[in-house]
Length: 374
Image 1 (cartoon, helix red, strand yellow):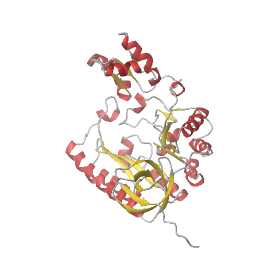
Image 2 (cartoon, rainbow, N blue to C red):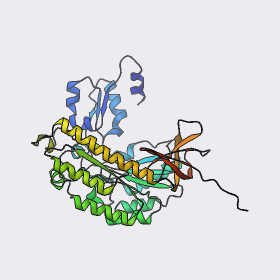
Image 3 (cartoon, one colour):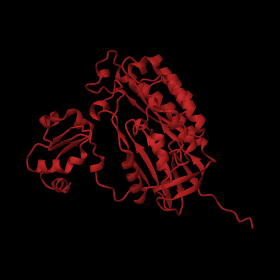
Image 4 (cartoon, one colour):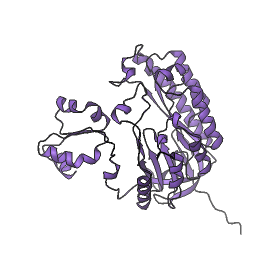
């Protein structure tokens, strides 16, 4: 990519569009604007070749989604942070009516087991202490006979890997085996991001979510039975076409029932080519704004309550970077909370911390004072 960087600093920059927008729009992007390179998410490994083509004035457009995936073509990472990400799955077969991912990322495809394990070992050798497994529907990962829990169990055997996480999950692929892994595998952190999107069965059906409110809540009951201290996270969309005040009230009641430690919430935004974009009863913008404010107030309340309940806990914190104050470091608790503390520990260390204070978005703590009892 050196030619791209050189042109960036010259008078004739090379312009590239990459990712889902490039996949969806393709040649239309080139037609509308002066763009040199258009590359979809399954063709990133072809970027050097595309840049060379563009430099020669040739067409540099690649939005193919080949079965032969890009992972084996990408260069190894030489330096990694203490918490690293590892993509194990891409694509989605769920076809939620609001979502473009099945059209831009293609069908669900699982990366090969051996390739994942090899990269995980390389990440650990390069300094990672924690690995988060990534996928559009990460818990749909399979090697044809075994599910994500087997992959997690195998990675847990890597000696210097201290923590494992995974995101994002779909309720339909939350198997009992994966739930049991939260009980049985110490290195699998007590945190689960499981989007629900809405609390109304009527809206869930219109979204084609393929699960109900009750089935989602039953999954969480099983998860909490397996790992009582687990922190739960979710995603929500407000203002989906046809959403009434009664539908929205069901979303708020679901939030009250779950008590999320974290959550992400958004206003519905129509995506061209999706079924929801042409549905009737589009919700007015001002109604969406008001509902989003109410939902976020409830989610912020629950996050603050979860953090407050952490005061007095003793836990391991992975130091990730320096804080803003002298001697301060910032790390993550097992429940994915940001933890501020003053310590001599280095980045990448796991330290025992007593949580002493809680804010709405983070907590603070200190290393225990050891007393001499001799």
